[in-house]
Length: 322
Image (cartoon, rainbow, N blue to C red; front, side, top):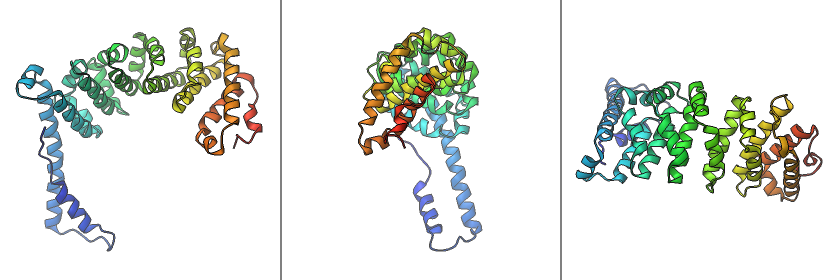
């Protein structure tokens, strides 16, 4: 979809001509100052105008768009542009006031998987570190379609993007976390860990770690749902990020146990010891180059061993620790 943007080339040429680093800055003439302010105001107006135009498209029924020759690829391109605009917190919050948030959430139910995935990406950008937009999305019932896509969409990319949006939506958001718990979110995370998608596993593990870190009382729930066994399996993954994320989750459970919390790892304790011994052996056989890349994993393995057995691991006595 074509768009009329501001004169970026002119603005860039002007900036380079006056800030080339070869001479000290000089005062702007009144004419230059006026031109620059008009250019910046035009940019601001254009962004709001474009967001309103995009909102109108999102509000238009799918069959009408198709009759006008608008394809799903066009919609995805449009959502790409919207995502750029809402990277500004002010613009993200303005999306609701111009009527764009509700139709954006409606795209989570679109028949095209690419649009569903892209809509979740835009929502992630809107709510990230933005309490006001988190509240607006919750009030607009945006949590429910995100959860539905995360748990049951047939497309793994859609599920992964929805999980990413949920993670950003409920971060530092107590009502969001409460809604996630009530919706059996932990059971859905357990299912996600059984996926064959490494990206999906990573996102699920990272959210589990965040939730346990923020709410140690949830360690009980996680243990009862069988997470320790699953995370032990993933701690031997071929993907280093999955291994590290699984070890972080296990460390949270172990630390909860040692601080007098739940039974932590429970019956899995012996299996964990075997796992850690295998990881220690694998790490001790690494080349110096691989050891550098595995620094975080080495630290996690040692911390987990120390939390469970109240002593440093054998990694500390070898050249594999530095």
